[in-house]
Length: 202
Image (cartoon, rainbow, N blue to C red; front, side):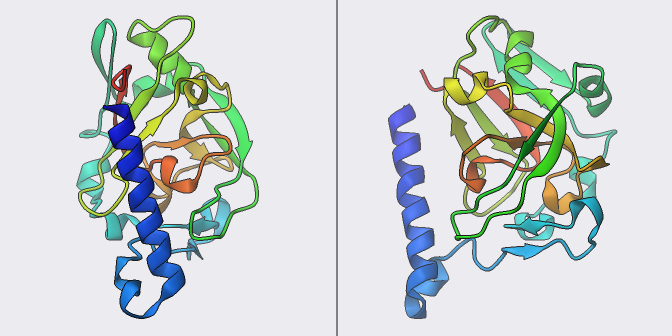
């Protein structure tokens, strides 16, 4: 259920951050450390990352426009959207930082993409959208899945981001699409999104 998913995530979050702060033999449990470094390529994507595409096992084949589809499931069924189809939907912008559980945060970045609540409406959730389970293409490591509450989905600043600072997301920042959520820890801002399941946690 939702409680189990959230509770397990909280425990894992505690263990990974404890590992980082204690050091020594506990250091190996710090699954997210040390990744709070800037994207070495600079430019619009030149801000801190918590894990690289290589670390997450993401390949160019996984995210190529010909192959990648966003699978969105909800009350009325499932739709599969290419990046080109997502770009045909209304695009919105949010200026938001990323605050990582490792203790670092970025300055505000300018994100542009599709509101999660608009994607919920595509699969029958008009009006008040429900919670959503976000799943990454990431193959291994922590936080391949993240649960967002209904109020986070409803927030107009919550986006499935396709661009940052006027440029396509880099692979390390989650190309082809990532979630950006106001005031949520970085681990909930899922990168390399492959699936959104609305109402899964009820």
